[in-house]
Amino acid sequence: MISFIVPAHNEAACLGRTLQAIHESARVTGQPYEVIVVDDASTDTTAEIARRNNATVVPVNHRQIAATRNSGARAAQGERLFFVDADTLINPRAVASALRWMDKGAAGGGARTWFDKSAPLYAHLLLWWLGLFAGIVGIIGGAFLFCARTAFHATGGFDERLFGAEDAAMSWALKREGRFVVLWSYVLTSGRRLRGFRGPQLMTTLVLMGFFPVMLRRRASVKKIWYESDREADSVRLDSPAVRLFNAGLLLVMILLLVPIFLFIPWSWTPRDTLLGQIRVGIAILKCHVGLLCWPCACFLVQNLARQKRWLERAKVAALLAVCVWLAWGSTRVVFWFWTNLHHWLAHPNTLFN
Image 1 (cartoon, rainbow, N blue to C red):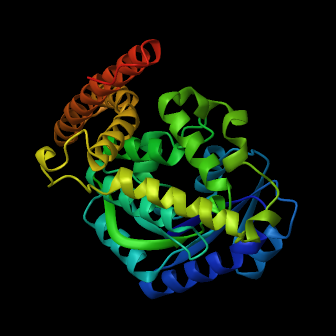
Image 2 (tube, rainbow, N blue to C red):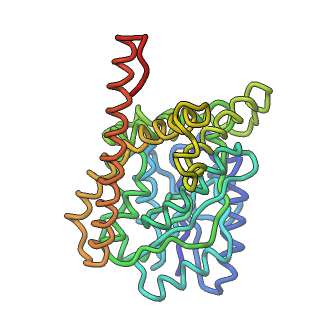
């Protein structure tokens, strides 16, 4: 049997479409299946909608996504577990591909995601880049995550010490038990958390969590982006001129950060004393500040290298660790140069950067 597990808190607006997509995808497989909605203290009609769509409702009161997912896994009867977010539309291709990989012995995996049309363009660009990154690193978010029951139990389930990024932690845990596959198939998820001015708040919090992972163990640190109970604002699409201008600015920043505009242009073509040269230097400095995130990533990889059981994965983690340290050290040198020279310039305004 296949078990589809959907954690939900006040998801009445999205849940019906999600469950219909699950049923359509599951029926194509020709295998017996069940759909479990783990209703985590909802105050709307989430449970009623789940029952109307032939799902088993498991009521809990955790208000923590890892514990909610684990409750669904304990109630599941299937040998193949699929964790699907309540605002995600899966498809037969992704489910069939996941089943084929598990038939070949994979411990688990997940699918890349696309945002729906409500998400701003900068979010689509960021998610596309993260999809490439996920394929290289071999981790995935929780919108569509699957695993064999034996592998799930071997990992101990989702880490209930975490109030966020429990899906990424589970990806690494599954990689220790066997092959973890990032599918080429995509699923569609909601961009509701990035509408209006909420996107920068989300991204700022994610960056802070990158530098300070301990935030993930404090509910208050992530409440605004993952644990809000008021879903009415999710269906409101802000489209004022101010929001459009703001989103256009963020799109420009994303293009400068993620698209290698100057990669194949020699520095001799853009002298630093020209406007284009100064723009190029500014972009490089901004990227190096972002590159400092490679330090906490390297620390995380060191921990996983020590815990990895499979030699092939050890080699992959070691290679990723080497790349992270190289990028982090290069970024640190540039950032140190920038702030040292900026301090010197502020102290002696009549001089310029050397």
